[in-house]
Image (cartoon, rainbow, N blue to C red; front, side, top):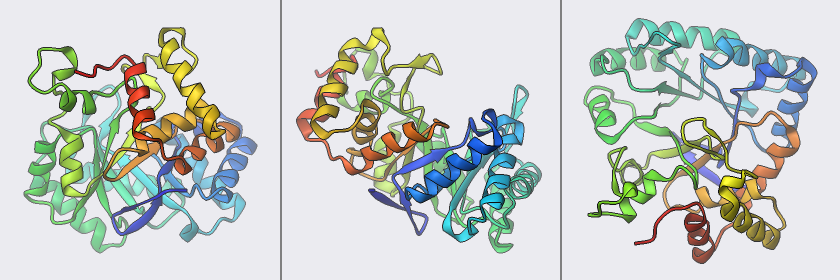
Amino acid sequence: MKRVKVGGLQLPAIAVGCMGLSGIEKKAQEQFLDSAVNAGLNFFDHADIYGKGECESAFGAALSALRIPRESVILQSKCGIISGKMYDFSKKHILEAVEGSLRRLRTDYLDLLLLHRPDPLFEAEEVAEAFDLLESQGKVRAFGVSNMNPYQIEVLKSAVRQPIVADQLQFSPAHAGMISCGMEVNMTTEGGVCRDGFILDYCRLKGIAIQAWSPFRYGFFEGVFLSDPKFAKLNEVLKAIGDKYSVDKAAIVAAWILRLPGKMQVITGTTKVDHLLSIAKGGDVRLTREEWYEIYLAAGNLLP
């Protein structure tokens, strides 16, 4: 399994997303967690809003029931979204959110904390105070962001002294604006519109890991492109390349994302053990340049 250095930690390139964990039975939760850890997939991504906190609670209970040592897993959570109401990066909210996550996860510390979706009202100095306190108390070991552009990160860094080690962003062959805006520079095409401030290049320059969420979706939760007839060509190419490497289409998507230079990770979203293990095989596949471009074009992207 390919590994990525993030915040001083050597993390699996495939991260186990826990957004759907509360939607399966308790026994299945334990089996899922146990199977992931045994497969070397010990990096788990959470957020305080997933299942209104129930996903973190389910994970904490499963970890305890399985008697898995805390030091054998790497836990990441996110905070800042108050669902349907607002985003909140105030010192008070960050501190309270972390306490809630620690309690639900049944742990004394988070390996990584990400700020979830930018709060236009955030004060960098206030965030810095929260980060300093959490670090000094040993409750958070590294910090990052989610869905932020370069200038938002720079504003944050104007006061925050800890490195920003990760940015979690939606990314897939069918949601590849981070690439197309660079490929179609100085063109009037749709793909040439930069909607993220050239975050891909920024993160590569700054050594920030990009964690790709919804790697198998298109649009904003519009659907999964795997086996979708609207993406017939893409599925055909993914299958052909997958057959070559003896892995399934999902593994090839993961390999496509991880083929990019810089620090790239894939956040899975499945709660099915077989599917998780299939995706993980993509961490051992290195696509050729020709294969990478073939997938890019098959997804409907333009090669000027």
